[in-house]
Image (cartoon, rainbow, N blue to C red; front, side):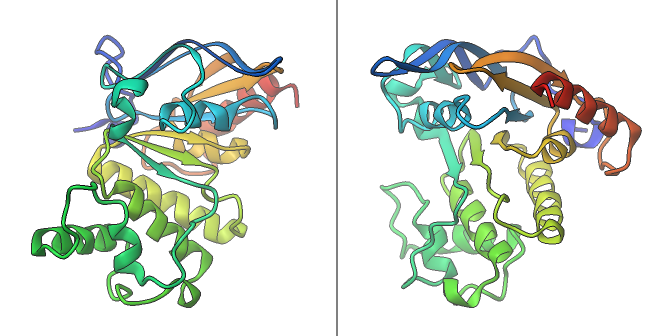
Length: 259
């Protein structure tokens, strides 16, 4: 039985899949992050919250290899992101960023490793399996303008999983969706996470979303961004949004944010 079934996080004594130590990021005289430490275990779901400008997205950029100018250490499965560790990371952005000319199958295939022939039957089977995983079977040949916002975000999720990453990073992927669609996509993400066991780090402004989805919630604050506190979410899975344990976690996160 895995963490998603029990509601417990991974063994904290194991080597973390994702780790940053003393992470500091500077842009000229502006310091975006200062001395951030974070460890995420294998198969764990961690959310990062904080006010605008506290460095949440900068943290994801470092881990994904998009930001190489930093001090301290950032590793994935023990490998420095500067030395190829970021190759084990999948990324889902706030906007789906789908190619307008491509159908669902083509947009998902973009996420396959560069050395994979997308026309190979095995690659095509992998893409179709991912499309089924995110609940879009039957829409393989649909183009982005034929998809709803939630469906487009599912394509983005499948593309992020196409590389079979050790870590999946999500940068506010549901912020543009209406409340009902957001709840549906949150539940779908949890289903995919439970099925695949991928380590997940989610950045969000939504305290309710963070508490509902994550095993732990890291609260960043200040400028430069530092870790204010880490809130353990002690609620069994599958979760009820009205669970008192979730409400208590939301209160603790809100207090840490000074709201």
